Image (cartoon, rainbow over all chains, first blue to last red; front, top):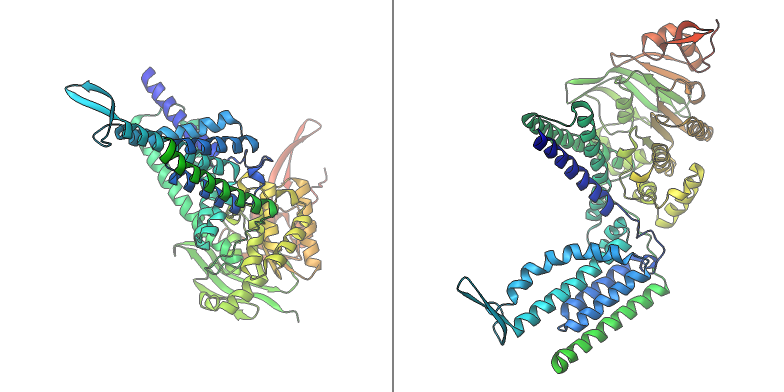
Length: 287
Length: 271
């Protein structure tokens, strides 16, 4: 009995946790709404400058330069009134995911032959860590740290619908941008539907649900959600037609770039170029 | 003689071809009229509004709008489509259907931009309509962050910004507090004074005397059983009771239970 009860709690915690995470991460504009340096920039310019930063991080061959970029990113977060503990937590969730699985094998001589600096044996297998492997893996991790941090910083200092509209800058078709915007709008609605459906089931059947019945309910809820989304799809299309939609949507993008934005763009280009240049020197002359 | 806006003759419509929603509806709407559609849930009011907005088409019978046949074929003509959509605006019953853009500003400006107004003109109209509804502070908000009253106001603003000649409203006061509801009635009357035709589907019998010159009553057989001025209709409590538009109301006076039909708008009754 106790096991069954715990199982149900686990399901409840999972559903509510997932919904809460979605609402909190995808739909929260808490930091993007704060007055801060990055928040005050034109989203298009901000997007372009962050792409420049990320490209510079990817092209640098120097670990030191990657860390300079990372420190720059942390400084930008600080000046944009982002809680650094929150920011570090948010970025370091992704960093091991994106880096460790690739970086660890690269340490060893099998993938990175070269000068051995450390070796150990596991079940008659000799593992050798090479200087080149260590450097390659460190560079890779440093790049991931900096680029993931820039990507996260961009996403938390920009309202999500603005990010979608910025896609127009990179010539993503208008209709695609609009569909993404609508997805963003209606995912929230369906999160609420899922939440309310679960609460309705819970209020009527209590916590303990027979396994078979539970399966049946989940299947029924999925079917019901699909049907609701289908109905909504038709109704929304009707609402669009009613207000002049004729297959080619026209959506507003009232971004305005001011002198501050252009100065920022020039500055970022200059800083990135200079760091890349220095990285080249450090790579070949110092490290 | 006033210009005919809509003329429906023996209109029948069934969802999926098997669930009847309108069974032989005849209705004629002239320019500048205020019309209320009343009836119990599922009696066909919303279906009629969607039909008048050219979103669905009858299985049989004819629908004319501005003197021309309103059909799928007619709306395939770009010019007719543009003229018709420009002149007729529908406020949906469910604001979540209508608010499909990520922000209120984009939502309200969607109509003018898609009707070909330039951005400058659309932005100017946007500022004006937001002021009319007193919702200037909602411009940057996302629709899911709004209350039901705010959603309704934004839905109305999104339609009225295009200044349509004919306004179709589906349960506009549902879920609104009395003050917001009052403001809405005043606004509808203001639009009527400007010469607009206003057709409102509602359950709210409180407001029909104020928003309609003529009331069409739908019954459960999904056709119009009566068309009458609001005062005449409201006086006929037996008819209203038969059509689920008023209910028997029980309360106490001096400790004694008392039962009577609960009608509107005045709610006065003698003892």
